[in-house]
Amino acid sequence: MPLPLAPLLPIALRLGAVAVAGLAAGRWVARRSHPGRTDQRAEDALDDLGEGVAFHRPADRAEDRQANAGARLRRVIRFRGRIWELDAGLMARVRLKEQRPDGMAEGMAKGAAE
Image (spheres, rainbow, N blue to C red):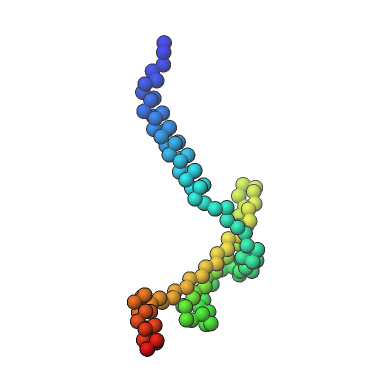
């Protein structure tokens, strides 16, 4: 007695469509990503971070309103006889500079030339 495969056809078509979409998305991401790089200076700076969270605004960078933040979390996790060491570090810099509209810059240049 033959197996009725017709009821399985819609499921197989859906799974095939999802697989093709996933393959296309993976290839699209791979084409648009870059391999990245490792900067030893950044690695050393992350290793020098203290544990906890820090946020400050350097006094010598007041003109561009720079703010710096850093965070580090170090833990040892033991689970079912396995041991993992977690070392997560984060450094961030945010700069906010005021830019003049193009029209104002031209007007100021004309005024200075006269």
